[in-house]
Image (cartoon, rainbow, N blue to C red; front, side, top):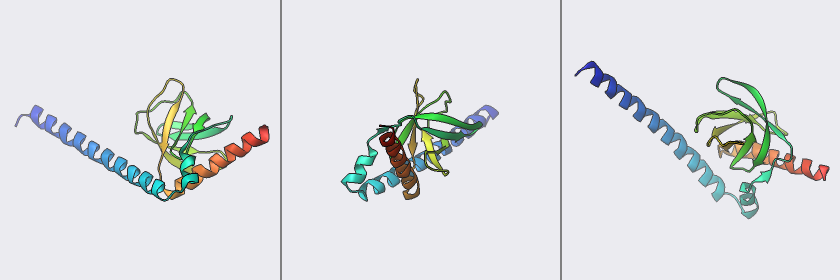
Length: 146
């Protein structure tokens, strides 16, 4: 086998390994989401509808990124859209500190939009509790300002 063929074979194996790991992460996140929805009643399911950020900010932390403040465009139990100039490849894992919390929750970049960075939250009960508290904090802040 030539060196070129050996290198190509190794590249294919490495890529297949990466695809397998990403598929595992996505399968796990889908399972978490399905369980979260199945355990929810109608009121909780409505929390997956996006609400406006109402001039609140989140702190994002990512690979090679100093902690950065970003305005929340909208948020739901499923994810958040942040107004910022930072960009990362879809699937990149980052951490987000939401309003009313000091605890960072894991999130994943969905895509890079011109005016926002859409992220999806893990659907574990721990993460959902933090996101739900942040949504309550944002709604309360809006009610106080009105």
